Figure 1 (spheres, rainbow, N blue to C red):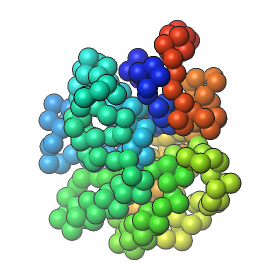
Figure 2 (figure 1 turned 90 degrees about the vertical axis):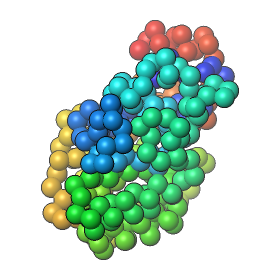
Figure 3 (figure 1 turned 180 degrees about the horizontal axis):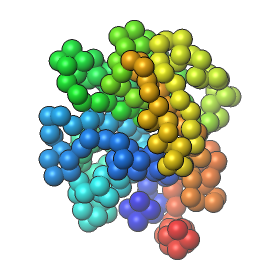
Figure 4 (figure 1 turned 120 degrees about the horizontal axis):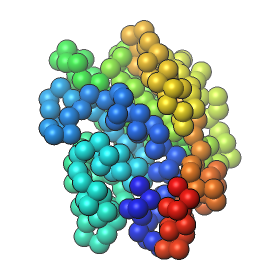
Length: 249
């Protein structure tokens, strides 16, 4: 992933690093997908609602075989088909995202349509914790709970930061699990950087309810001076820093 970073230009590196294990788990152990036929009718759907972390999604899609590493290295270049925010111009990306609060309503609509049509497709949506300030998410959460959309799983990237600071200092929504349970969801929590914990949470029975997994993550995971730092939301790196990071990794 770091190889694709464009020195002094690429932003949201810390946001992307925090969800690498989640996406790796999803694309290699959970989603029913076929890189050779990305539009198969029976595929599972994944929507990255925090579209600014697209670098992690692109890198995962590359590793999963949707496109080549050569394509990935076009990331964030002028005129590239692979912009900083998630775009359907990239093979395997199901929905263009960037404006927060939009992907969950879309995911709920897809899950509801699959239920009506009695189709087996599942829908997964990854949101950021700061994104929960958007009211459209709560409308979708209420709708999904009421209609018992057990084909829907929402992952909350709970890194305790958002675009303007710490989440508990901007709008404190803690504790999250009781709120979701009140709206009819099954809730699980886990460490977002341990595959066994992720596996346990994702495979927890939902009992005919939609599922929300509150995943505790470290913003900037893997780069010492980025970890748990607010500035990693926007900070770019220079060529020397990039070389040092790759060496350390």
